[in-house]
Image (cartoon, rainbow, N blue to C red; front, top):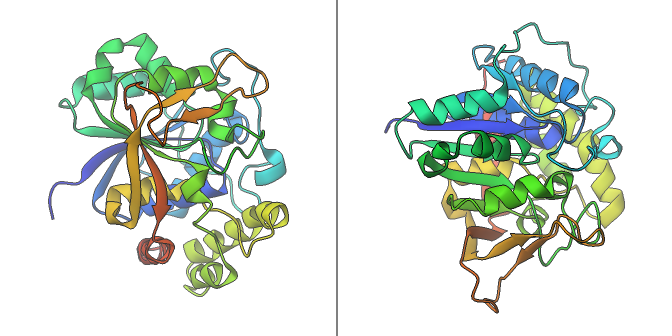
Length: 315
């Protein structure tokens, strides 16, 4: 196998973030240099704790976890306990972590990593609001040309939003950070609601995790049992969208996905459409293309990959 791809996972777990982290830790093609926590689905005190819970669940207490931004750049923090539960990982019974939180600030870790690793060798996998990434770019603009790629879950176009009619949660929480990142000139691949809403956690798929019989498999099923209930009621579907693991699956099997390079701008001025990703899918403007917008996936292939990799985790 070639040398593993170096990644930093920036996240606000969240049940779907948890599954994404498990997928990454179960994939030898990826080297997770660190996990950086940000406030989002729940406040920072819980997201940094949840990152460590997931690492221990995967049998990887060696992964360094860093605590980052406690709030968005400009706006007040909006959280999503109504979706994820009070802890962010409601569903299974999970023990508090024993592995330490790193003393270094997550933003400093991001800057230090990109300044010390060879140029264009580290990918940022962003599963939550973009606050930590924007702060790192603002603190040290020299990292910008050194980033190989940013792969993120966020936004929407044809599906609209999931926290307002216009905006998806991750972008809505910190639209000013998103605008900073999308305008930076870094290669971006984005997984909007348009594709993640096609990755449904059907009953059959959830039971595949439970039938593994391992602690990791059972916990994954229990996380999904809790997480999907909100979207099943909202959308009337069998299962709910599994958003964040698509970011990691893309690095492993990009052939599962299709999309196109387009211009995406972030709305920060209007309260009505705050956080909207204005996606020029049809090329009706002459604005420069700044993102690869993923729109479709092979859902069966995606879930087969999840089952294979999470099933390979030892605990």
